[in-house]
Amino acid sequence: MPPVRLPYVVVCILLGLAIGWLPALFHGPIPYKFNIRGMEGTITVWAWYTARMSIGVLIGISVLPRAWYLRGPLCGLLCLFPVGFVALSNPGCGVPCMFWNEVTGGVAGALIAGIAFLLTGRHHAHDKPAETPMADSAR
Image 1 (cartoon, rainbow, N blue to C red):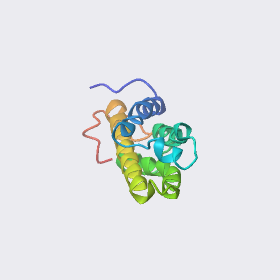
Image 2 (cartoon, helix red, strand yellow; image 1 turned 180 degrees about the vertical axis):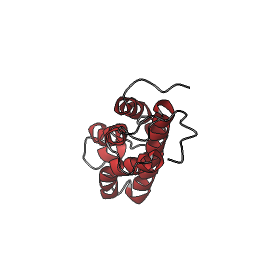
Image 3 (cartoon, helix red, strand yellow; image 1 turned 90 degrees about the horizontal axis):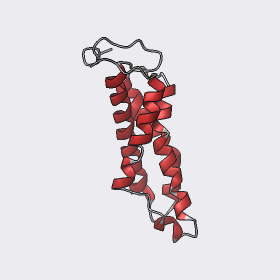
């Protein structure tokens, strides 16, 4: 499979926009948990949506750690970490919500970075594309 001609950063951003929505199908946050606390839940949940969709941006613009399989999950965890504090502050969410958001952030990051590597043959934006991405996975 020949590498995709799009720049690595663009591939990561597009993947992040697509994959960032998947966790919302399995777990919240749901607006109700914030509405009962006097917050506008339909607006509050957008903090999680934008954080998840930002994972691809962070993967695309970062180069450390150099290997995609380390950088992807780390970027996913970092993107969801700040909104995790909002989950911790809500008695209806707490630690379980933060935990599952971090897990899905790490998984989304791994998927985005892994698919970007398969499509482009690059570990990061400054990497030269591999001839065959699978043969270069130890790099």
